[in-house]
Structure formats: structure tokens, C-alpha cells
Length: 488
Ligand code: NAD
Image 1 (cartoon, rainbow, N blue to C red):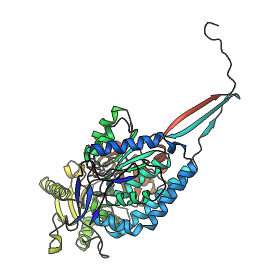
Image 2: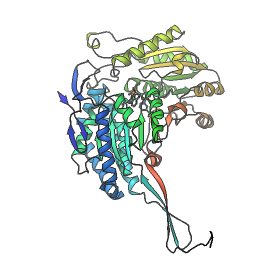
Image 3: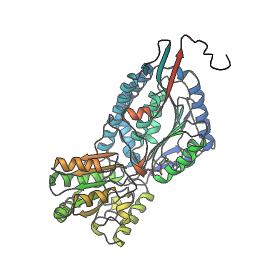
């Protein structure tokens, strides 16, 4: 049985009140680990350690040293990629293929930020000859990083790499449902020669996250999760006006025009919605199809759905694993029922699959609800499970209006062979990412984040590093002379 501990000030330790939490496999509900469950008291110790480390020698590290550190972390991720992928699948239920992809992306994230940090040198500004004026980027300070359960280590990497690369110190709090890969990652950090307190791990629930958001000793909080927690973090951050980054939920339209490549659009509609059982912030669960091909499209999806192989993520043939928790399972089924009650037509799924292996664990059939209209709750709220809701539209204007009519703005996709229409749509859709004739790809070089209620700020890309820095104007007068302005 895996036992995890907290990592504070360079030491592995138990929580102050010795709390533990059983970590459960979503595939069969067996207990797979006992994780340290921290409280506010542990968070305070970690914050104090991070503060001391930030105010100490860590500030003197050079960009070259920090770039080398990020590259070293990438090497360790590569070395332990198989172990990490297995832990991620065990804890989240996602297929091993998906977890292996995550680990590759994580190493790439560290390497990308290593390159970016190494290229960071500030700027010398035009100024009079006796003045040196420079624009410098400096670390923000102590960073509280709070991550969700769907992409535990990937989301952590998007925050840790730029935070450490920019010279900050870190307290990370993963979701208390899925702490295992972040714990293993911390073991990799412990192999390195970092000053105590630069990197701290505090596993626990909302109260630990709330302490990070409230503490006057934390300078920045970067949070990925739901809108509810995001709102309370934003309010808590006003105590010292700390910097905040929020990556929140989405309600992401996948819009298929009649002139699209139908084979590809059907295939990607499934991928958009059922990747990691739909538990993806950018999942394309809101399918919108042009009227003239709508019935055919639903027919093609209906043929494919019963063939999706649901099963344990460790089995090679599995295409879709379980959802994360009993709470999610119940919430998703409730949303499906709410949709049916509002008039949606259940084409497939909407229940636990039949068979003994699916009796334990949080299993759901891939689900298709057709004839959904834009005013229904299931077309507006994030479902975060393996459910496609399908709406019909009659014109480009109608599709655009309905797609933008959501408080969220994370990601959208458009399927068409008409490049002019593709360009018009991708400009007019108010979402942080708009794919045309594709779904899901992202690169460390490109920004990730949402418009509107999908969040504040961006991760990845140069802006994903800049968010962990303060800008300073350094002005040095080399030849000061009296001005005689006042009372001379
Ligand atoms: P959640 O909001 O319940 O929890 C996220 C993290 O915040 C966890 O570590 C949790 O313990 C902590 N937390 C909860 N309440 C808190 C509070 N009041 N103060 C401080 N911390 C608190 O979200 P979740 O259920 O773990 O994740 C699912 C959500 O995350 C979905 O809405 C999904 O769309 C979103 N998400 C967004 C992105 C993105 O990039 N935009 C990526 C992944 C997930």
C-alpha cells in the first residue's frame, strides 16, 4: 500500500494532526493508498518555509541555473515516465495510453520553460547618457499552486515549471482525490539539491487551498478547478491583493457545418467528448450540427457509441475508463436525467454499463442526448463526464449566437471546408482556443486559458512564464547633480 507524506522545508513529514485519507481506485473502489491529509497548520508551515527560502539564497540563482534545473526535472520525468503513467492511471482511471501522453507532455513543458527562462535577459531602455534604465523581470515570491483531479500532474507541471523557472518558491496542493503523481514528482524533486523550502507539497482538501489563498505571506495563487472554488479564491486573494491565475471550467461548442469532412467530424466529435471520459475542461461535449446533416450525423454517432470499449485503463483494448468519484458519477447521471426531463432524446447510454465488472467503480456508458436546445440546462452547464449533448442549427449566425451564449469561454471547434467561414467563425467565437477541423491539440508554445468565466490569465507560452514575474524599472543615475528646483 502506498503511503504518502507532506514535504515541507526539505523534509518528509506527517501532518501536524496525523491526518490521513484513503485514496480510492475509481475502477473498483479499492483503497490504493493512504495519503497524508494536511490542515491549515501544515499549510502555514509550508508557506513559512517557502517565504524563508524566497528571502534567502534562492534569490541569487541565475537563469542558467534555473533552466538547468527544469531540464534536469524533465530528465527525471522521462526516467520515471512509466511509473508515473501507471500511478496516474491507477489514481484517475484514465487509460495508460492517455497517462503516457500526459507524461510526455509534462517533460516537454519543463523543457519548453527551460528554454524560455534561459532566453530571458530583460531590456535596456533608451535613456540619457548618464542614466542606465533597465526593464527587469523578477520573481513574484511565494506561489500557492492548487490543482484539480482530472490532469493531476499535467496541471501541476504547467504551474511548477514557470514558477520555479522564474525564481519563485512553491507550495503545491493537489486535489485530495488524486495526490499520487504529485507525491511521486516531489520524490524526484527531493533527489535534487534544492535549498529547503523552495518546493513544498501539502496534500489535503479545500481548507489547505483556502489557507494558500488567504495567507498574507503568499504572493501569487494559481488555481485550476471549478468556478465555485475559483470564486472563493478570488475573494480570499484580496487580503494582500495577491496575483491570481484561474483556470476554470468550460462549456465548449463543437460546431459542425454541412460542408465538413463528415468522417473526420464524426470521429473527432467522439474524441472531443469521450477523451478521459469527458473529464476535460475543454471537452467538446456541446455538439452543434447544421440542420441538413443533423439526422445523418446523429445516426453515425449512434452506430459508433455501442462499440466504444469501456474498461480498466490498464487493459490495452480499453478506450474509455471510469469517472473519478461517486460524487461525479451521481452528478453526471443527474444531469442526464435533467436533460431528458427538459425534452432531450436519449440516443445511447445514460447509465452504468451492464456486467459484473462494472458493479464496483464509477462506470458510465458513453452517452448521447439529441434534440437538445440552447435554453436547456445541459446545454449551459458543465457536465464533466462522457456525455454529448447535440443541438441543431440552421445558419452560421444562429450557430455563433448560441455558441457564444454561455458564461464560459475556454475552447470551441468549427468543422467546415470553407476557409472563409472557418476564419470568420474563429474570429467571432469568444473562446481562448478555437480549433478548425481538429479537436484537443495544444502546444506548450501556445497560450492556454479562458475568456469570461473560464478564468483569468493564461498558462503555457511566454505569457505563462510572465504571469510568475513582476516587472521592475531599474533606473540608475550615474552622475547625479543638484537640480535647485525647490528653494535654491
Ligand atoms: P475543484 O474546484 O473542486 O477543486 C480544484 C482544487 O481546488 C482541488 O485541489 C481542491 O481541493 C481545491 N479547492 C476546493 N475548494 C477550494 C477553496 N474554497 N479554496 C481553495 N482551494 C479549494 O475542481 P475539481 O473538481 O478538482 O476539478 C474539476 C474542475 O476543474 C472542472 O470545473 C474543470 O473544468 C476544471 N478544470 C479546468 C482546467 C482549465 O485549464 N481551465 C483544467 C482542468 C480542470
